[in-house]
Image 1: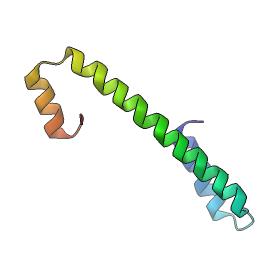
Image 2: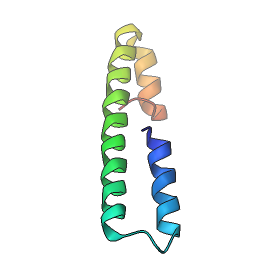
Image 3: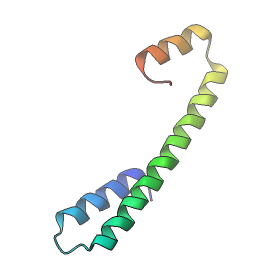
Length: 68
């Protein structure tokens, strides 16, 4: 499940009063897992990008907040 899908499902479940505590806990765990996966993918993509950037380009992207 993608992060946007997991968040949408969690929001929908929160809006429904019949959702159990266990179901919410499960959905929150799914969102956390999806966020961790997205962070790892972003870090890997940034590392790949750094390989082809010049120092000046990297500095600009860091200043703009696109790279950590």
